[in-house]
Length: 353
Figure (cartoon, rainbow, N blue to C red):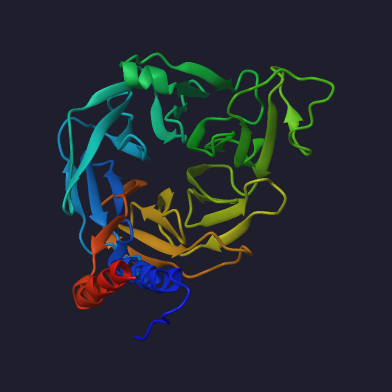
C-alpha cells in the first residue's frame, strides 16, 4: 500500500479506515438460540427443545417433572426469564425462573402467581402483567407485574361475562400490550369465536373512537368480535398483525388482529389441536395432543391462505406452547487472527505519519 506524502492527515485517515474495516470483521454475530417449551397435561410435565435452523425441534427434554398436576396453557416472560404455567389441577397460575447453561435449560422453585382459579390458559404482556382466563367463573383476570414481583397472588377482574356479551367460557388468551385477545369455548358462533378488548378499559366519552367497528359494553370498554368460525375454540397466539387459533375439530384458523378481514382456514389436517406459539419471526407452532406431536407452518403471512403443516417435534399429549429466546451474542472471528498482522501494520503506519 502506497500513501501520498502530501496533505499530512491523509495517511492517518487511510490507516484509520483500514483499522475500522479490520475491526468490523473481527467479531461475528450469533443469532439468538430459540427454545420451544410445551406442556403435557396428562403426566404433569413441561418439556423444552432447541429449535433448529429449519424450524424442527429434534429433541424434547424434561424441564419440570414434579409439582404440577394438569398443566395446560403456558407462557414466557422473556424480559424476566419466567415460565408461567396454568394448572387446572392445582387451580393456580405458577411461575418458574428459567436459566440456561450452554444448551441445557433449568428452572428454579415453583412460585404461585394466582390462586383458586379454574385456569387453563395464561399470557403475559411486554411489561410483565400476567393475564389468565377462568372458564368456570367466565372471567378474564390480570395480576400486575408489581404483584408478580412482590409474590402477591391477588388478581384483578379485567372482564366478566356478566357485563360482556362477547365473553363466554373463555379459553386461550394473548396480549399485545394494548389489547387482550381471547377465544370462547361456548357459543362462539353467536358471541364470537375470538374477540379482543382494551387491556386497560377506559370510560366512554363522546370523542372516543378507538376501534371503528367495536361495540361498547356496559362498563364502557371497547370490544370487538374478530371471528365467528366455530362454537368452541382452544389455543390462541399473536403473530404481528395476525391471530392464529385452534378449534375442537382438526382445524387451525387465522384472522387479522384488527378484525378487518374474514377468518381463513389454515389447515384441517390435525387431530386435536390445542396450544399455539409464534417464534417471533416466521414460524407458528401448533400442539396436537392426540397426534402426540407439534406442527409448524410459515407465519405470519401477508395474505392468509391455507398451507401445509410439518411435524416439528414428537411429544405425547402436547398441549400448551411457548417460546424462549436466549440473547444473541458477539463472538471472536477467525478473521481477526487472519488480519491481525495487517492491523498491526496499519497502526504503525498511522503513528509514522
